Image (cartoon, rainbow over the protein chains, first blue to last red):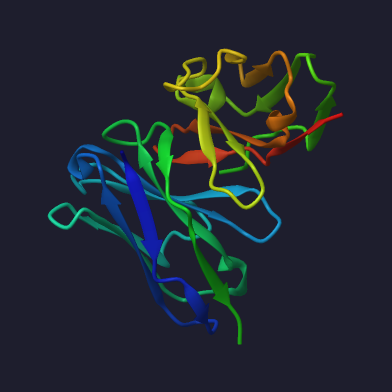
Length: 120
Length: 110
């Protein structure tokens, strides 16, 4: 059974950096596109970024482009989100999610999320 | 990348049918066959209920159906049940190779 577990969340000061990880199990990680999606407290879902199955392409939401990078290590079945120059508005629960295709189409497996709080 | 437009809330009685709309542009909903719907109960992760406009993942009830006309996608829930009370989100692939979500719709079962 496909399973995703996020880690790395915490409290960080504005302007600092944080790296999230997402460990995958129960499926062929290297055959799926992978996403990060966030949800600010009391707000809706916001798509953040996607990386294709082989890491050949990455795409970002306007709100994070230039500050966040997404990467993956298919040998470790792990997805990453490097978040730099963090702002208060980046405070959210961050979910990693599996795409049901090689690229970016729809998210059929979700982790339980890790909470990031940006505050001084 | 503007969010897709969904009604903030909808409500219905058990057994009724209702439809949630999701309006975008020709750069997303109107130009994509990759429109999805997700259900999220409080404190839980979202769950995929419709993909590719109208397909259901394995295990999802046939009470859920999806469609699209022009720049607007729709989710219809028939035979409304108490456990359908949740937040519902649409998403679409865009011409920029990104994804975009709707603002979400809170469904209340009266």
